[in-house]
Length: 391
Image 1: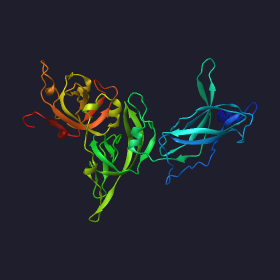
Image 2 (image 1 turned 90 degrees about the horizontal axis):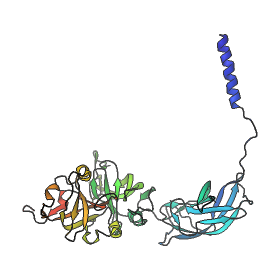
Image 3 (image 1 turned 135 degrees about the horizontal axis):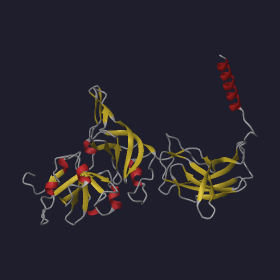
Image 4 (image 1 turned 90 degrees about the vertical axis):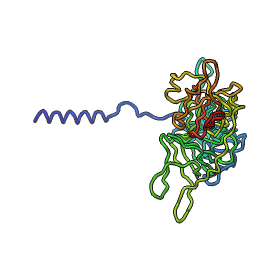
């Protein structure tokens, strides 16, 4: 009992002593961050009434005030800051000097803005011995402003010139709406969504990670039909080896009342005709405009390939060759498994078996060879033999 009592006393002493502090109380001193305000009568817009986003970007000015930890202007501060956007890009001068705690009428040219964004100001310090700068963690942000809603053509069309041409909205969560959109293909793992009326950059892959289905509100869930109109969709933009996707999407189909019941609105006439890409197979800039869209290559043959290569064994990928010697990969594993590419390989004397028109969805994979572009037929009907006896 005495041992227990002694243990309790020691434990109490330990708790009290651990709760004590020694030395002087720490104080936050110096720069805490920045207040960022729009200098002119800049219209922030609202989710219901958005500001125009011209092709050259939104041009405005901001005032920057250094703040101390007491949230008051810190007039004795001078230092360098970088001016950017939370999501978009500042196409004007990015690094400026704040003197005596203030920098006024700083020009900002805001590009690649969709949905909502903020101007971000962060302190940077120059490394000794080189010309690089490193953020210190002291930042400030402007009020949120609302620009154009996200569209498929905007996400796909605003891309960098890097390999695979990634979207400038990579890693952003965005909502597609205010455009007529139609499902043009459904495969295991997702579906392809097309922006009706858009000529270039008109389609995108919605990666659902399983066969997409929809609640038809009548009996039970059903697989998403091709031709379904989609009112809105939300997801995170992601670049998969150069192929732009929207991952883990949620989507809301358009419904119509029919015979007193709510049914999906399906209009296959809105699915665009496949574009012939024979002449642009070696032009990545032009091919990028057709990414995730319906395309066709005409009068092609299966080129020689190693049937033991992992790309064929695992994915049924093989090259197609045009009469002019241009190539594109085809992938038939999930959508057209009955096509026997091995039987179509050229013979030892180079004689080919048959000529085909191949139609399907255009994908990109920057590590694929001999072409980084891959054609995925929707089903066997997309593969037309031109010189088969039973064509």
